[in-house]
Length: 177
Image (cartoon, rainbow, N blue to C red):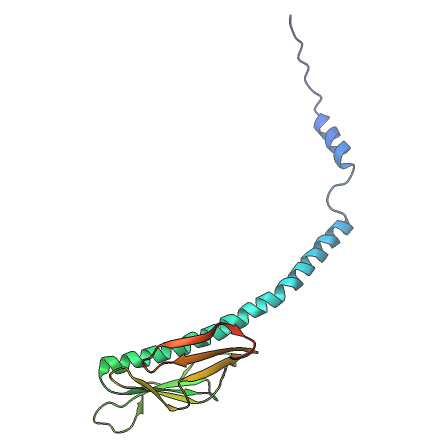
């Protein structure tokens, strides 16, 4: 038996497509507006979490800067073999590293004052931490603990007598402990 193969008409696909979609080509105004409304609602829902993330990032950046300055100053005192201190200014949001290199009898600045944040972070009090060549830490001004606040978020930094730093709570909180 022989089969006869007939070619399909060239416009068969076009007829099926017109039958499925009708005569429309593109999106209606209502469909476009619905996509726009859904996108706007999702964006509005995400903005508060982005703002919270930015606030956490900024306060954690300030804490990292302060922590680094404490560790660095203690390390310099240990390595150089003479006293160092770091002075935190709550009004200027800066820290200044100072040393008492023998035969000096008073501290002198090492470099310039460094801002610990470019954001309006609040330090609870002016604090001066003194580092002995054996690694011992004392607070000559203020305490061995202070709080850092930024836009309602708060963290407490505590420095032990041997330079260990603890941060409580580990995540920034709306109120300080």
